[in-house]
Amino acid sequence: MKLATSKQKEEITKQKWIIIGSAHKTMMMMTMSFNTTTTASCSQQLASSQKTSVRGGRANNKLRAQKHAIARQNGRRASSLVVCDGTGKFVVGGNWKCNGTIDSIDKLCASLNSGKITADVEVICAPPMVYIDRVQSKLKAPYQIAAQNCWVSKGGAFTGEVSAEMLKDVNIPWVILGHSERRSLCGETNEFVGLKTKYALDTGVKVVACIGESLAQREAGDTLNVCFAQLKAIVDCVTGKDWENIIIAYEPVWAIGTGKVATPDQAQEVHAGVRKWMNENVSADVASKVRIQYGGSVNAGNCDELATKPDIDGFLVGGASLDGEAFVKICNSAAHSK
Ligand code: PGA
Image (cartoon, rainbow, N blue to C red):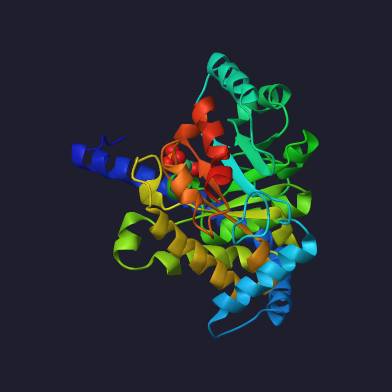
């Protein structure tokens, strides 16, 4: 047996990372080919949903009028405190990520339960999977629970994963999918996120689908194109009806966990662009109803101003969701601002 030279060792270490990365991708490719039926029916569904889409022209005014008509028809906004361009309830998510201990999580639940959430705001907390049962048994209404991820298909030999069926089995109504940390750290592609979204929805778990550009993409002027490509991969897999159970979370990667929040105008510009794209590529009805959250360094100090923007229908909050008092204030921001 020949011993490797230090240069060879360095090469091997580099390759290991490449191998880990490509194994992950191969796994995803395999999953995607297992799902060819789903993918095929995804495109058929897309074709039929596009028939109902409204295309071209300056859609915004028309869209706004349609949205208000739909809102009136649904009677959903009539007596509501919150008025935003999405016609659903203001919705705030707390993404606890990979943080907490039994002790800190119990304290957070107690603090959240003692806060008063304004009527007409929906709140979804996403604890780490290992604490999900504990948090579910502690948090009282109106808090709902989300998982931070689930597998792309039926459970089985997928070490470390949790299936949508399992979430359904333990009554977890929501899952966050396509978070930028999973995209960048775990190699999740747009297509993979699209398939995951469809699978979760078909299993009866509602989805917070995250999109957003990196700093380099923003600086290259690609923000909207990146967001549209991420959205298209989801649109290609879901039907018009599925959108009742999807929230879009726009989270610019450069604003996540950095303390560098998008300005209200920067966020509004992308939210309005996303809604317009949904109008042109899905339908006016879906564009009107879909709720678009902003995420990225939202805190108790900046939430009120962000919430004044017409296309911001809620927030997805990371760091500040670990502080009960701050999070309750963020949940109540729509009532102060709209
Ligand atoms: P942040 O994270 O609020 O800590 O920036 C947001 C998120 O990743 O959802």
